[in-house]
Image (tube, rainbow, N blue to C red; front, side, top):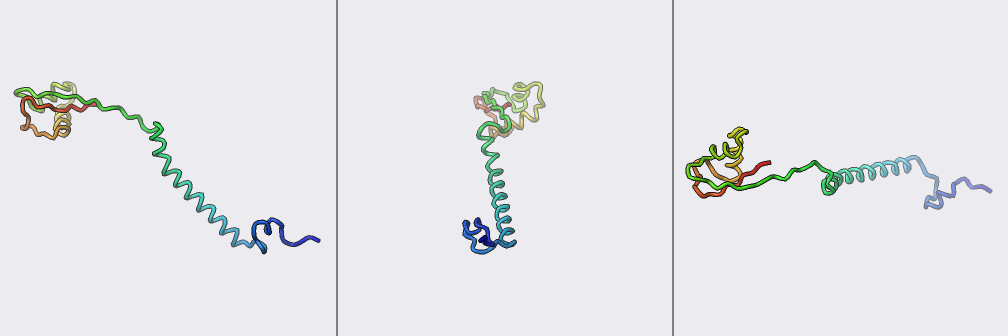
Length: 116
């Protein structure tokens, strides 16, 4: 009257009873699939958050120009532009932003002044 196999085994294409190794194998496959999906989701989470504006706040960089006068040096320009700051840092920033050295300044030359 009653069979020894469950009807669900027959319904899912199992002819015989399910043994333990099949169950373990399916479990490992599921764990591996979940891990792959979580790693893929984590890899995409950072760019998606940045694209939606949830990343670190970025301030725009102010950029202006300065026209070199006769007798100007990078040091004197740095002191004029930022009297409260250490001139060495400003001189380095001016030289790097414009690709110039201290002796390369020419009157009338336009320098880019980068500040935050």
